[in-house]
Amino acid sequence: MISRIEKTFKVLKKRGKNAFIPYIMAGDPSLEGTKDVVLLFEECGADIVEIGVPFTDPLADGPTIQMASERALKAGITLKKVISFVKDLRQSTQIPLVLMTYYNPVFKYGEEKFVRDAKDAGVDGVIIPDLPPDEAKSLISSSRKISLNVIFLLAPTSTPDRIKKVAKASRGFIYYVSVTGITGSTLLLDGSMETLISETRKYTDKPIAVGFGVSTPDEASAISKVSDGVIVGSAIVKRLNEFPDGLKKYIISLREAIK
Amino acid sequence: MSKQRVIAETGAGQHGVAAATGAALVGLECEIYMGTEDMKRQALNVFRMRLLGAKVTEVPLGSRTLKDAINEALRDWTTNVRTTHYVLGTVFGPHPFPVMVRDFQSIIGKEAKKQILDVEGRLPDYLIACVGGGSNAIGLFHAFLKQGIKMIGVEAGGKGIETGKHAARFAGGSIGVFQGCKSYLLQDDNGNVLGTHSVSAGLDYASIGPEHPYLRDKGIIQYTYATDDEALAAFELLSKIEGITPALESAHALAEVMKIAPKLSKEEIIVVNLSGRGDKDVQHVARIKGIEL
Image (cartoon, rainbow over all chains, first blue to last red; front, side, top):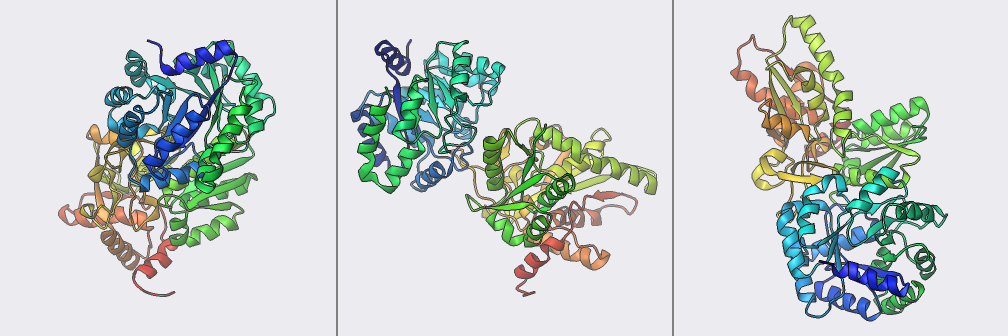
């Protein structure tokens, strides 16, 4: 069975276009607000939406998403609530949805139950930055049975062996982390991304989406020249929190830049 | 590795001082991450680290203690991995840190074994050590694992398990995956990590090195806890009767000695690990007692 994510990339490839993948932290500051933003993303032409699950110790995240996570936790948001939020959201949209969560909430929830409940609710993929494929055998096997895509990450420091392993394990797309660092870091466009992406393409024809540190339309445009998708997180979360009125205009400017 | 910079996290400040000393000796740039709360209660060690030329960076996030300092050090390492080595201070984190740190710390047990054989001509009956992340305990125990000696790890009971204000992972936690390894963790039903409390910064941590649950399951090491008050009483007792001021962390191990020693015969030998000195805690203890220095 082909997932909504895989289908989206297939259609985009035919049209020679890049996916625009915006991120939002669920429940920052409320789930009602998150629903409006997801629908706004769709209205502005997003192809896939990444939904963050708050966690007390978000190791891969910079200050912007750490603070969003704290606000969401304060609002009482848990993995369980995010899953039922997706179920509710599915009444209003069929856009592919990817959860970004740390591993311990999934472990505590129970891997098999998580995979089943997430899929039933309408989740299409999951990104777990602190779970490398080496440790994900059971999650991979239970998620593949029902085509829930587990998306793994590559970094600028990934070795050829690691690239092969991640390319093989990842489903839906491969998440290329554009910087050595945390979400919201400053992007460095020095050509190393092109090298690693073309290296990765030797082993796989799966789509490659780039995230961490993408904040301006110019950066998004530059990245879309070498990738299949562009993920924007911290910059959106920051705007939503600081100048929510300018969010729509900003999302449209990103969409127009990603071709 | 040709790396020019080292980073470390610290709770009590002991590991931070050690890392800063090593870096100063060989001329490496050194940055130490420390929670705001710990910087306050271990001010002496903050001063020592800075004196040694290290940059001490305050971590005002989360519970502002050891776990948050580790998060921040891991974030730094992810960012600067090409130029920086992370000197993790306990038997925790992603593999191979737990075994690497254990092997370095095992010098404690090797020396203790040699010394007790020199002095007493036999191995001890008990080994007791406090357990935060668990490096001083593993360091002492490791050389004795196959000898059938009773070994006790003492966690921080804080204000008591029933209050929820403690860092006793075995008494109050469950299995989780945190900061790169699977072990006992103080967490809620949703897998979020709970805040901890201990009078001692070095034991104030939500998880425990993964080799500890392994050795506990095999029945080789037993675990218990001592409360803040018991540790403070032991801190004062050792100062008074031996003229040795122990670290508040180590005072937890001493509190266990105070509990079991009266029940043993005079012939039995207990080795207790005084893993740190208490100079760093004097101001903090005075503050707790309402004395201004």
